[in-house]
Length: 191
Image (spheres, rainbow, N blue to C red):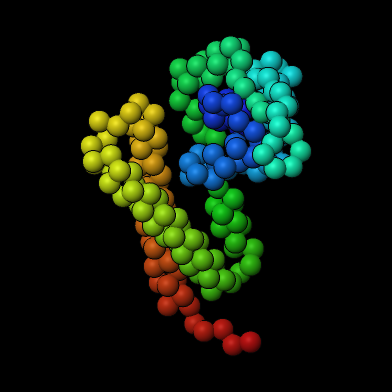
């Protein structure tokens, strides 16, 4: 999966770069993040490839704004990507790389502090996702099979996020328990 395809999907309606950044914050950001410093160069590249086009229009405040629109070629590329095989194996978790090399420190207590901070972060994120789920269910009467097509698919991704983050919290708790057992087996070091 690439930022290119995420942006093509978000451009089903014309939008500015800031609109797209908001779309990340409000929805897509639960599973894919991007900053304006990534969004704008990607939009320019997509425009050069003729997958979208842009035009300037007056802004209600400040200078004119550039509005991007999906082209027919862009829609075809989006559909090709959506209809293709599932894109797996592209997830990257920087915190796992940090943990992988944490033995370099030689300090299990520092590993414990790191894992505690990670668990706390993931727990807060999980609470946000669950609150969003409650809002959606309350707004739609609780039956996902009755949601609009877009609502159903977005709810399905939200549920995956809840399961994924929930399993990561469980893993953090298991790892913290293992660290505590390891610490209990070690004699206290005196500096």
